[in-house]
Image 1 (tube, rainbow, N blue to C red):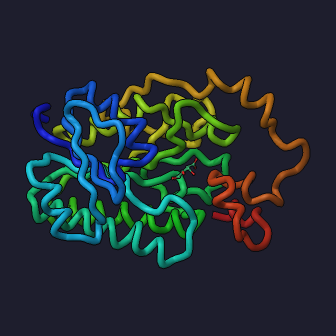
Image 2: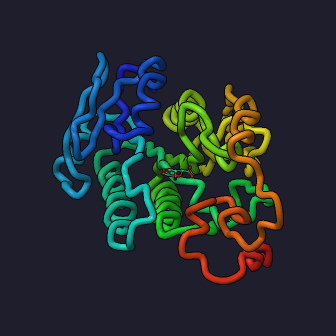
Image 3: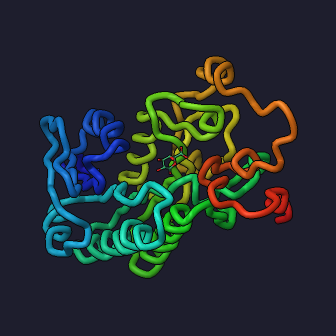
Length: 277
Ligand code: 15L
């Protein structure tokens, strides 16, 4: 990427954007932070656009002069279907269509571990597994991945879907020891999405070098990803305050499945059926 060019970040006023911005700025990218609210703490090389993704004209204007889009915006909770459809389906369609219309070839799509969150924790997932969403939210994220495949194949765009685990300064509980991604490691994946010359369409896991990882992240490794941080460095402190369940936990979907509370909420019946395929 020509570092004088600009990366449009949807959800640019949000938490994940705030974690990424210093690293992406340090890498030399100019950032255009699009959100429904004003992004705070702008530094040199950053500008903010206040707009809704339902506003096609505003989105087209924001994309002008951009080289790539990092699509972080969306509904991040397991809200009812109408919010998933507006936040994670319609908004993603709008972003991909606007990027295509503007000739912006690359989209980095923020998918989620919850697109595959009903896999049992014992399963190690690669990029080819069938999605098993753990929530309405996970269904919306899996839809975004399909959109990415469609726009890459049909229109020749270049799309990186990052199934983000838990993007935080440090892991926050036992489950997140398996899915944590540090801000600088996630920024490294975003850079791969913006710059990798051979990228066409890929799904990677947005996780650091975690000893307890749920994932085989070989697809990311092939694209040159070399995570620098390890959740295990935080394991002793976390396990002291969040130890594994003492007895048989197979009646608790949140313990059986990778998605934790997203898997547990509204789960009906015996979670052991999750081992059946
Ligand atoms: C996500 O996808 C959510 O956006 C975030 O809020 C966390 O819940 C994260 O997954 C997680 O699983 O920790």
